[in-house]
Length: 327
Image: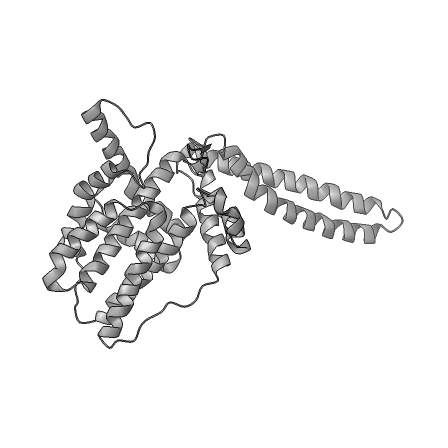
């Protein structure tokens, strides 16, 4: 069963742009679901899945909805009602949906590219595709878990939107259609699906004579980099990785001191007849050399060491249609 507090933590993280919180909560949501699905498949078939297609596997979607989402959304604690502050409810839901759609756009990572249309892509899209390759640093189990959680959050928020928008007389029929539509969705189609829900909420605000609410505009490139940095820095928390991480930082500190001292010492030797000037210049250069080298080493060296522990990095292949795929 999905934990309400964890789901709320993820949605709050999306609104507040706290992406480490989003990733941490998503992993907490997705890991038990993945394990339960594995156990269920093993019990039924005697096999564990060799390849996971959580974004498009209808068997998994059925399992996800029947065992987790249906129970969660039917709980009275999670029903979105048209209560006293209608405008606040709609605005809050729109903020959550837009945050999720943007996160998903970066999360899908440019994993699939149709080379036949590559010449028609704009320079901006090409640059974006080159930049959003952040998931390669994640363990495969974490990628699966987060992918599952993002789909779950998308269903929960979009289902809330549906309950607000649709008319009472058509509610049961429309909700069934919504559920079936969700089960057929690929993760890559989720941002567009979410955008349609936001448009429906905008129409509802207009129909209710409410002021259509909008989020403050984002610096898109800055936000992509922020999400990317959070994904790249996200690690499976265990003692071994923490030890390696801080060992890497310590080695980076020592190496930076050595580089700074060597550079500063070289400048000191350039002015043997002016020891005071040489000492001042050498000291300043040494400090600058230490700070610049430590900034570089502390960011990259621990990640280099941690890469040896990474399980199941992203792999690429060419499918039967000649298109590049990643899993």
